[in-house]
Length: 244
Image (cartoon, rainbow, N blue to C red; front, side, top):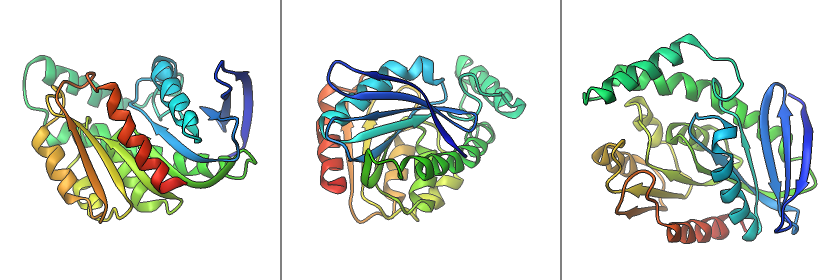
């Protein structure tokens, strides 16, 4: 898929922000003044790039301050991309279960997450194919945040990603636990201890399943949106250690 830049602006801290399309997939690339720079892929939940932009831009500018480029793409079925009926049905089933205070079944989680992983991971790989030849990009690649199952699959199948920072705040199909055992790259996992939408024990079991020799769990008190600002410091040191 061909990469085409569609807009460009210099932010007040000197970071160059460029929107692009990869085929029909929208994306954004942020590069620091100190390019060429190692690249961090910014994962995010399937809420749409427009809605996620403030958080993504803040993460990208923090990465740029540490000397990293950052990039993200719109997930399948999100933003202005075409919806698919099965995913919409799974989201509706999830909402009904949560509003009723019922456990979210394995069937709902599988229907919601597994097709998204299958569709999204090849697109992230295509983004790497297009971004890495750019002169502003140099060095190894990291993956940060996002739907953790997408990160797990990428860590298994994409050798260009050498370190990953995961947020244990999304539903994980049981099948992904087996894939987690195949992950061997260094990991930094952030867990909100009181995350109302996340099964804490399942998150701990997933961390235990990762096959990486170097894996760190950073747990903080508070709910899903209560991640303390200082939690970014050890994550930044993690990527500096492995990408520079």
